[in-house]
Amino acid sequence: MASMLMSLGHDEEAFGHFGATGSYALAARRAMHEFRTGPETWQHIAVGQRKWANLNPAAMMHDRTMTYDEYMNARWLVEPFRLFDNCLVSDGGRAYIVTTAERARDLKQPPVLIAGMGQKNPASYPESASYFAGPTGAKEAGDRAFRMAGITRDDIDACEIYDCFTYTVEITLQDYGFFAPGEGNNWFQNGTIEPGGRMPVNTSGGQLSEAYLMGMTPLTEGVMQLMGRCGARQLGPQTQTKEPVHILCSDNGGILQCNTTIVLRKA
Amino acid sequence: MTLYTKPLPRINDDTRPFWEGCRAHELRVQKCTACGHVRWPASIICPQCHSRKTTWITVAGTGTVYSFVVYHVAFHPAFRDDLPYVVAVVELTEGPRIFTNIVECSPEAVTCDMPVEVAWDDVTNEVTLPKFRPV
Image 1: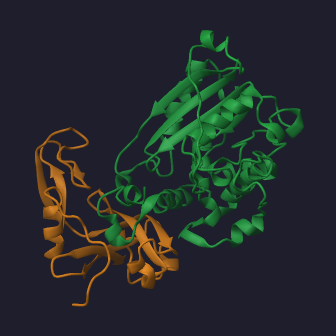
Image 2: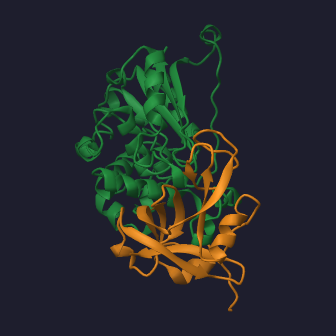
Image 3: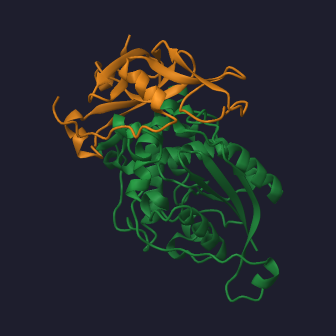
């Protein structure tokens, strides 16, 4: 894994550029130049997701709370990313079973429907990328997934967003159209994505605070929420959130080089 | 020359003209002779028109900082003494972007869109790295 990450690109390690943190930080820095974003925005993502992890006994960070001060006082790794802008490093496993809706009816567990999916891969070498500050693949992938599901963004009750870094959550939600470029700071204020918030995001704690299981972290959480298997963090009355019918899930790869969006629907 | 312990570029047939240029203190990138697109990194076909007709051109060695980050962690021990150091993507005047370091400038003073020029760093007898400094 280390050698894979070390050789993501060409010869950039000769300049001391290694791994995903540095490249996503380059994307985030360009975004800071093009619209209003930065740690003041990302703190809401790190702290908000941690609150969900505190309700999730399986989360690596279940027993550790996080304040805005703790986020801001954490050490820099690759500026503008501090420690808590980065996802966890985890060993673990997740699985889901995909079958037809007809077969699923006879199974023991309640099924969840895949209502729509979309994929957009604006892949190019990171240094020649035009999508550092958006639009990433999430924009077109999201539009396709909504179209297939026959719904709009207003029908989404919660989001499970691939969150390798805090900025990834912001740019993905921004590209889905939840807020205009630079308005994320305002949108995230007052606990929007937290328990009790109007748009719960990464309700397991996500890769930042539950576990990094690649795209499985967001997708399986979306499925489990719609199955009603999430215990103390279950969306609905017990977390003062809307009982979910549609959950929007994202996965992305490379340095924002590809995106897959899936709309899940309660059966 | 003291022992150089940092990673060196893995020069191959695609990138050899670039690194030979650096050694001669000339910044070279590829140009499509079918559509004129100037590109970096090196590739065997043009990403704009898919032509394989390619030539190498020498560019001015000037540009602007497209984006930059400041490393506060040494992911390779040989960079420990350099911390904090700046890695940047510089947009060359001719269009393409290139990974590099910003040198002769404190990390706090670097900004996006800042004008820069190439600053050659002869790190070994065979390899010269194209770094950039403020103009």
